[in-house]
Length: 395
Ligand code: HCA
Ligand code: CU
Image (cartoon, rainbow, N blue to C red; front, top):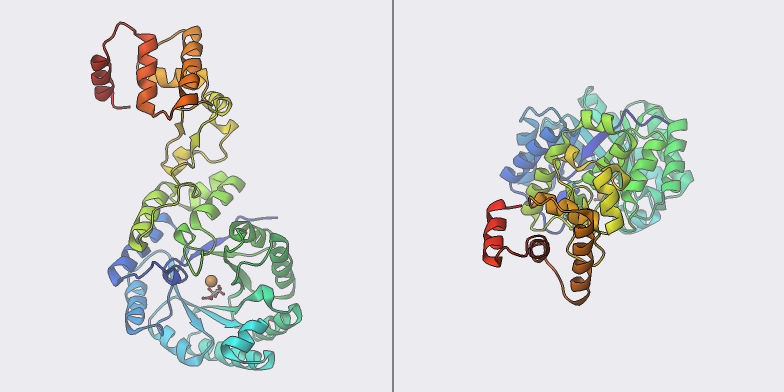
C-alpha cells in the first residue's frame, strides 16, 4: 500500500456552499480560496457556473487569481453546463451523473443505457473543445447503485480514453470502509484513470472511508473545511489531514502548512455562522486537553504517550486540566512550576489530595486551584497579594 501520491480536492466552495449556513459573497470566496491555497491544497472545487450569474463570475474571478491550486468547477453531465464551465477558464471540470435507482427514478429519470450515451457524448464534446482541461467523470450515489450498472458506465467511458479521473461518491454516507475498498480496487484494476473519492458523513465514516479509498489505490480525496456540506457534510479537511499525519507525519508536514489550519477554520466558521465544534479534529477546543491524573503524568513525561498528533506541528498548544477530582500531583507540580513555585513531592501530594476533596463538593476553576496551591505553599501570603501576583504572572 502506497498512499504518498494523493491530492486534496477542497470543496468548501462547492459542497461547502451546500451547507445550510453558507452564503458566500465573491469576497468571501476569494478570501477562502486564498487561505486554502496558502494551506497548500492541490485543487479547489467551485460551485457550477450554472447555479447563478454570480456563481459564473466567481468561477472566472477565482480561475483568474493565479493560485497554485488548480481550480475546478462541478457540473451536471450536460453539454450546456460543460460549455459554460469551459468558458470560465477553470483548469478542470468535475462532471457527475446519478446512477442509483433512487436518482434514476426520482431525479433525472434516465436508464443506464441513456446515461452511458449521454456521458460518452458529453465527455467527447468536452475533450473536443478543450484537449488540455482536466476532466473527471463521476457517478452520484455510487454505493447504492448496482455494481453491474456502475461497471458498465465506467468501462464505457474508460474505453474512450478521455478522462483523467473517475470519481466515486458516497452521496448519502451509507458506505463502510470495506465497501469503499472493494469498489475503488475494482475500478483501479479495470480502468486506467486516477480515482477520486467523495464521502458524506451521515454515519460518521467519511474520514475512514477516504483513507480506505486511498489504501485501495484512489488518488484524490474530496474534503471541506470543518466538513461542511449537505446535511452534516463530508470528509473534514482537518480530520483527513490528521489521519494522513498519523500515517506519515513528515509527508504531511511537507505537503501542507499545518499551522494555518486554525486560522482557516476560524475564517470559514465565521463566514458560515458557526463555531468550531469543541471536539473537532486538531482545531477543536479540547483536541489537545488532558485531564485524568494518570494521563497528565504520562503526558508531562512524554506527550507521545497519549498524543498521536503533536499540537506544535499545527500551531496549537497542549493543555493539562487540573481543576477537578481526577487530578494528580504531577499535574499540580507542573502548574506550581508555571506559578513560580518549587514544592516538595510531599507537599504537592497533599495539595493534590486537597484539590480532590474540594472538587468532590464544588466545581473548581483554574483560578480556584491556583489560590489553593498558594494557600498551601505560602500560607503567610495574604490573599490580595496572591491575587495580584497571579494577575501579573498571567499564566
Ligand atoms: C450532491 C452531489 C455530490 C457529488 C459528488 C461528486 C454527491 O449531492 O450535491 O461529484 O463527486 O455527494 O454525490 O456532492
Ligand atoms: Cu456531496
